[in-house]
Structure formats: C-alpha cells, structure tokens
Image 1 (tube, helix red, strand yellow):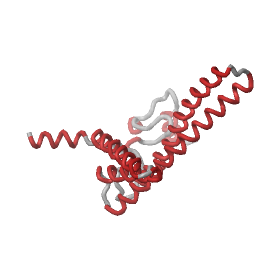
Image 2: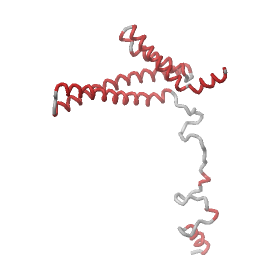
Image 3: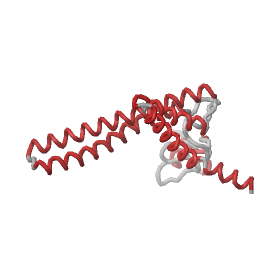
Image 4: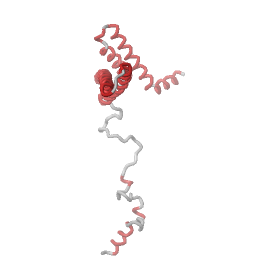
Length: 193
C-alpha cells in the first residue's frame, strides 16, 4: 500500500481526527455542509413564479374534509348524548342499549357531516369561481361566497329563511374578515390618526 494513501486514510479513521481541510465534513454523511445553501425562507416547494399563498381551489379540499370530520364529531357527540338520555329513560340494558347508542351516534354524526360538507362544498366552489372571475382573492370574495352559500343552502325553505341564511353567512364571513385583517385595520387607523 502506498504510504501517502495510508497516511490520508488513517487521518479519516475514528480516533485519528480529520485533517484540517476536512474539518467541516459531516461525520455521518461524508459531505461538506458548505454545498447546501442555508436560507431562512419557507421550505415548501412551489412551481417557478408561483405565489406562496395557496389559492381557494387548493384550500377547498382541506376545508371540505375538515368540515365533514368536524360535523361527524359534533353530530356523533350530540347523538351519543341524546341516545344516552333515551336509554336511561327507557331503562335499556345489554345489547339493546349498545345498539341504540350506536344508532344515535351514527345517525347524528352522518347528518351533521353531510350538512357541513354541503356547506363547505358550496362555499369553496363559489369562492373558487369568484376568484377566477375577479382574478383577485380578497375579503370581498369571502363575503360574497359566504352570503351566497347561506342564500343557496336555505333557498328551499322559503324567502324568509333564505334571507336569514344569507345574513348568517354574511355575519360569519364579516367576523372572519375582521379577525384575519386586523393588521390592515390597525394600519388604516394609524394612517388616519
């Protein structure tokens, strides 16, 4: 074996210590960390020229899914409570008690999941279409989408309930917009002060 090769190899061995020019090498992966660009920017992958904010259509899937899951959890808990009241009042025991509770949980969970899922689909679809038409994603889209969702969702129950649904949608959207835009409101207040 060549003496120079043996000397270089022995300096890389454990206990021998790395030579000075290998001081920055990772002992585990055998790479120089200087080759990896260290940045403080976000680490998610975006296509070239894309904005860092996800659009309404991309957000729709998580909104619809979380609405269905939240509705199922809420409806299931409510169904369990109602079923427990019925089982206790009727004095049911054994398998009949378990079956009754299970039926109440499943019926309540599925009804709430369907309702909130439909509302989320309407809201997300109207929001995505509005964003495409206006080419802007702002608070106006949110207010319009929520109001239209309330109007459409309650449209089969008469004009009065349709208006109430639109009002509820508008109110919830206005509260959401105020909450998410509080930095803009503080800046506006400072400009006029």
